Length: 421
Image 1 (tube, rainbow, N blue to C red):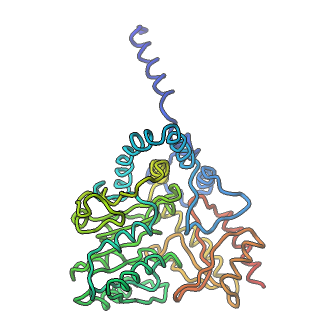
Image 2: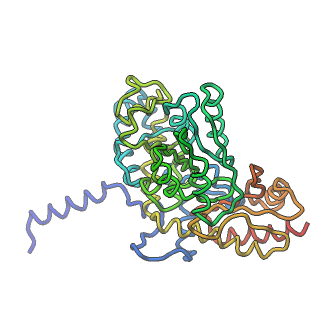
Image 3: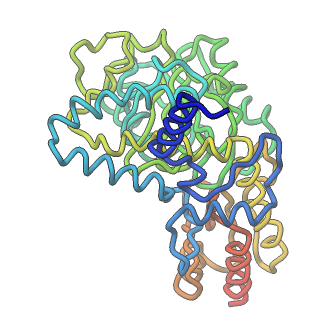
């Protein structure tokens, strides 16, 4: 029955709908997929994900390991927040956008499975992890266990503490890939002594894609009173886990890698009871505060970048962590299984999802990694990266969610051509 009240109510609802921001599906063009639906092999779905990015159609980018592109919705958010900041910087940056950091902290904590009071935002993995490395209270003679396959910035940070303060670095050296969690853990445990204070675990080795059994190593360390630092630069928003699953006391990651957040965004996690005794990298008012925010005393930074992390989390959640990992692992195995059939090609990464995700490494007999990578780029417009590191020599291939199997088919065709030389 028509009534003035019903009419006004419907008009009000319609007006409200028009004023609401568009849904992420409408913004990106990626259709919503009900929970439990497997789209791992659904190229039509992933083509739509690809179209949410602005990646070059001329160049196949298979080097997402260093930094990943942002979906358009994230790029637009950065531009929007930056324009707002420029209207009146000191007002919009410090009085408006700065307050938005708390909601972003909550979104990241929800994704990470932690309390917001354990999450700090910074600019990259190196900054997060060096905050930990230089903030830990160590003295001469204290031992730290780490590996020669860790990331150079972290290795150099530990070497600096060794040189300045006399801590002792105990190096492990692995020949990856290894598909034996006990063997990896035992090698760490064999290096532990009564003087060991910290173990540094690179959750996913960036050079080759090897995943280490972080929780198993952490449990063994904690049994001996050893603190656990986890470098998750390449595993967060890539592998499907929550931070507590890794057994980390301290954890650092970049958000501009697998979360596809704005360039220059990262995240630090410190277990609540550990915050007080960890010194901040940049001086805070109270260096022994129990507030995680003491690690965010960076001075002026890009508030636009920080705020747009929220859109990156939304985009990631739209796909889903489990669904994303399944796709990334499928893409890695898709190209490796075919590449292995090419004469002269050797694979150096595990096919097992327990020990590998999206990153794969290969070599071509009789060719240097740099030679292979250059040929793929110069002759075929395929962007990869040559790796020459401790016990690891090959070409790293790193697809992402916007990569479709047609891109990998193009890469495989190019590799067949290069391997004939």
